[in-house]
Length: 82
Image (cartoon, rainbow, N blue to C red; front, side, top):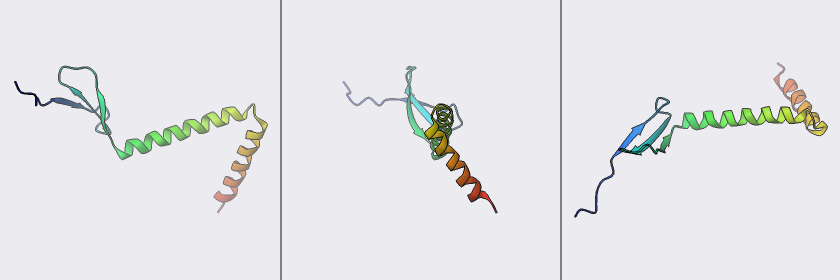
């Protein structure tokens, strides 16, 4: 009997290669095989945008947070002037 049976994999990418999944032939369970740098950067950017959205919502009931955000806005406006 041969104990060294090679596992055969199916590789799939629903997003054109940014995320590659693999699963054993005959199985529906899949695992992430690789993620492109572009996809990682996109995911980080989305997470940061979600965080800022949450911060803006939280500032509506938090005067100290609102004041800090207003300071950031002033700083950004001054820095962005030509």
